[in-house]
Amino acid sequence: MTAPKIEAALTDLFESWAGRSPELILPLAPSGSDRIYYRLQAGDKTAIGTYSPHARESLAFLEFSRHFHGKGLPVPEIFADDLPNKIYLQEDLGATTLYSFLLQSGDYFPDYLIQIYRRVVEQLARLQIIGGEGLSYSYCYPKESFDKESMFWDFNYFKYHFLLPSGVGYDELALERDFHTLADFLLTADDQYFLFRDFQSRNIMIRGGAPYFIDYQGGRRGALQYDLASLLYQAKANIPPDVRQELLDHYLDVASQLTVIHRDQFKEFYRAFVLVRQIQVLGAYGYRGIFERKEHFLKSIPFALRNIKWLLDQENLPVDLPELYRCLRQIIDSKKYEPFDKIKGSSSLLHVTIQSFSYHASGIPEDPSGNGGGFVFDCRFIHNPGRYEPYKNLTGRDESVINFLKHHSQMDSFLNHAFSIVDKAVEDYIERSFTNLTINFGCTGGQHRSVYAADAMAKHLQEKFGVQIDLRHLEQEKKAHPDFR
Image (cartoon, rainbow, N blue to C red; front, top):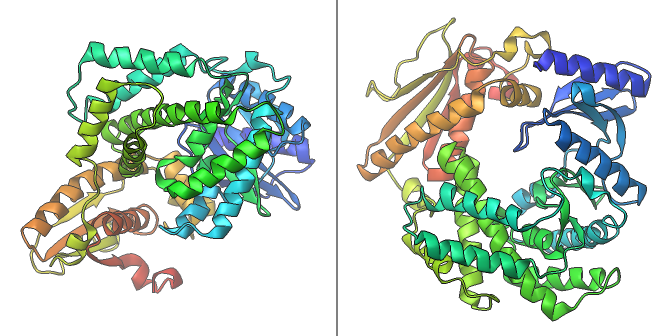
């Protein structure tokens, strides 16, 4: 369904629920799935509108939500749905995720963040145990339980999308034997609870200091340990080991009030579930990062590998998995995915000039360094938000334009390719002590697509290499736009 048709269908659904048409329909930043989200508002009535092309997945989310909400659990209320048109309206929980708190904290893990995590694990225990009571698992998609077949989907994803493209040689039969050993052990854990499946900080909203959970449509019956491992060992969360232990103990205190917990046995299974979750995420990062060249997934790989290294170094895993451990040690020791040394980049001679420009008004700008080189990327093939009235007076720095480009254009794919090309040049220029590199992004008016692309490139190079950057938006500077002074 095209964007205008989705927006029209959501408008009709909102009007039938709220009694009036929305005054605002704002596309929201995309998630890792192909679901599309909007914020719709009319006066004091607001809702999140969702379009999902997957009918069974949507049905699972709707049924789970109604079940959990009926038990007073912290999930969004479902206001209305129109499954024939693949849309539904849910409660607007705001825009603050637990992940946004992690971004603010940097490498430091402050006490206020620990307190938020304590509330999260408390509510997780309630969702898994109380929420699992009376839940119809027949709605689960694609599986009713986290069984051996589910585990092997993850194992094979890891093997073929991470180990193989990483150049790790492995004994196929020995590795398969280890996978069976690990799965057979995990299947002896008590698995009569709701397993969220992707319980991580991006799927936890914080409103008024309290956590709310979203995106549990992949949930199924399983063991308690999996979701806790997903949360506390999320790659880029980088939770200190002593804080992880404190949160594990707090979770067990809460869960023990809701069901029978044998703490020592729980922890033994928990360590194995940490390993299987890290295997799962490395498979996902491999596919999204190595194959699809999505930068933020590549950036997460070193964090996941550090989690695995810490786990292996403890030497307290409950099962012996010699070939799997050997493969993991090999990739860790190779340092293949360690990030670029930003100190090397920031102390280099390289100065990168990044510019957005208008093909219509001024054409390709000259290289200000006098070298006459650099890259020119033409953004005019990308779907132009400037063609639509709500965006005409906005720029590529406005939230609604950014979300339009992410949802309704090829911008992210285009930038992933541009990053890959430019990265190689930057690394080479740093090594060879070059002093200048110019990167230009052009679109018709130098206002939407090229502005967003230039900003994204500047942020990418600064975060990855730490090089000196001069960011210019030539057309907007001529207009003396207040956002570009």
